[in-house]
Image (cartoon, rainbow, N blue to C red; front, side, top):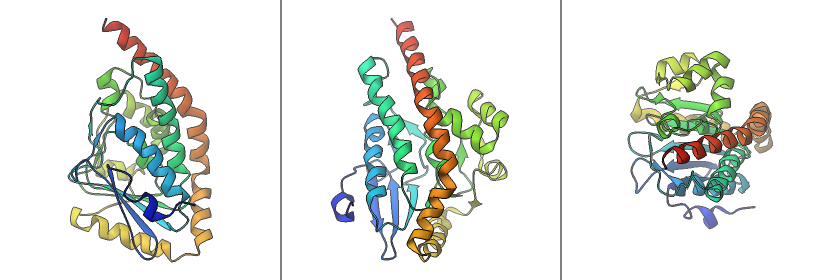
Amino acid sequence: MAAFDTYKDLFPHARLTRSEDGVLEVVLHTNGATLVFNGYTHEEFVELFHQIGQDARNRVVILTGAGEAFIDRIDPEGFDFFSPRGYDKIYREGKKVLANLLDIPVPVIAALNGPTTVHSEYVLLADIVIATPDTVFQDKPHFAFGIVPGDGIHSLWPEVIGSIRGRTFVLTQQILGAEEAKTLGVISEIVPRDHLLDRAREIAGRIARLPPLTASYTRVALTQKLRRVVDESVGYGLALEGISAADVARSRK
């Protein structure tokens, strides 16, 4: 079992605090400001979610971002899409990060502080999603890099909003605003920015008062189908993403 003091300061892109009732707040950031996702955060978040899931004193998790967006920027630094060994690392991390997020055995609340256009599949594995009015969803980076969105985007969006709508979202790089996302079932509530964390903490506090096994096993029960989706689709999707990356690499020669 992980102890909070042993891992809370290990992650340079995640600020962790925990209340006395076991509500863990995880703020994703880069130097205290909005997160810039890159190859180093891709690796870091695998262990971040693993450690959170191993700590039995966590009763509820609130996942949010710093600054003006949840995740809206990506930088190629630290990624190697174009060599077999480099992509093998991305492949292994891409599977494991979603498995570790699903393995967090307590309810997860995503508190979206703005645009979520990079790795929005993380949000789709939360149990409750609260967002600000300026939150938008899009799969921005994959087609921009010329590669298949095979890291869970391809399977979780159709699962959450419906097959045709989900495929349209991916293929057209559709931008979904907060109100439309709420209508489609992606967002639970839309609240003003200055009430976002207060509302997340209010809900988390109520859940934290449940018997520990009740809250934990409810999360397990609610995510069982998503586990099957991730297990069956993400490895294959990432393999297809890797093939497309190899084709991009060849075309650049």
